[in-house]
Length: 217
Image 1 (tube, rainbow, N blue to C red):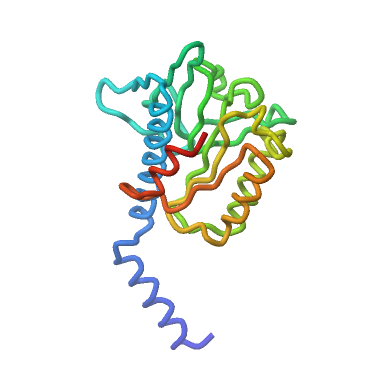
Image 2: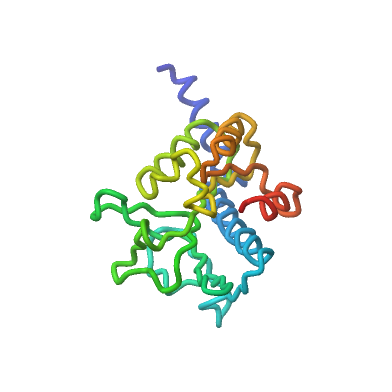
């Protein structure tokens, strides 16, 4: 490798390190998008007549935007309507469908109230109502593969035709950028009446946010 090429690479990396797009900045933007998704999910429940109550927020609402830590040390929302009582939480571990020793961390999880076990894991078959993966990205096929992989490991019956009859609230992939290249998969899910959705261009104040709140379930 020539020294000229090495210098060019070094200069490029140095510029990246001095820009506003440092890893710490990007990480904060990613976490902010997760928190935003939690809020619009909560609003979707409120618009459907659920009573929303913030929990664990006496000193301010503390978002859990990373896998580590005790979930009960962070803030979350409860959603109640009739006999339904759910918790809307960030970064919750759910138990693998087949192997109880394995778990997957979900960006946003809607779970039955008081269902987090002493091991800080939710039973994906009985207590996980639905979930959302939040990607501060444009859509690309690997994201769909990841979403379907998570579904397969937690609630694989969602992958069956007409699964919406058994899973009333679809799990979903939420994108901050355009999902144009993968929206054909969302149409496929809808045509097969599957309990999976993809929503794109979710930015504060956008029509896409209004569409999500109205059309998620």
